[in-house]
Image (tube, rainbow, N blue to C red; front, side):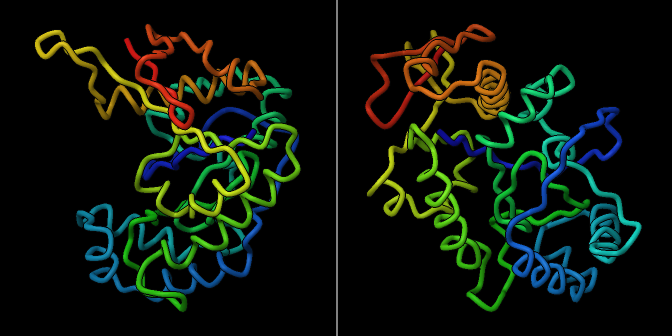
Length: 256
């Protein structure tokens, strides 16, 4: 079973965690090509591409200039990203066994790196998957990455005992995968988190809460070495529980 999650635009390379293993992103040639494109962008072009403020434009323009340079900082991807999902994973409490399991079963989708193992070393960058960065495969990153990411996931799933792809990524990042190809040979399960709205007597998805819940779920999978759907349904953190009435064969809904 493989679980996919989204990256974050915020990064933190100063976490006081030291790991005894690292790995290298798989798509080196593609990453190098995108880095060249980023380095070629002027500040105004970068600002327009990513709709950035002046301060963020300067920060990321400098980041991109330093990509692939000798002394540029590197960090394991699971430690480098710094947002609601990753904060709620409570990574500082992971054991070495947890990190090993994560590296074999969790994948982080990325606009620059395509797909990352948690222990893959990465550098500070900003490149969202939705960015319309013209490239040699089309006019956006979906066209650049979709075939590569999809094939990589299918290759990895073929080596797993339970050939299941669990989606904890946002819709923006899920679009970089050809789900029709995945579903031909493998099981795809989408995970949803919903809050009860008493005034409307219904369950609704709320963005911030859903992000946090994805972090809780990712941590639950890693800490408990989850590899079966039946065990995934036992998730009961922060008031959430499995809602069978709202779920189906391809979607698991957790409500509170």
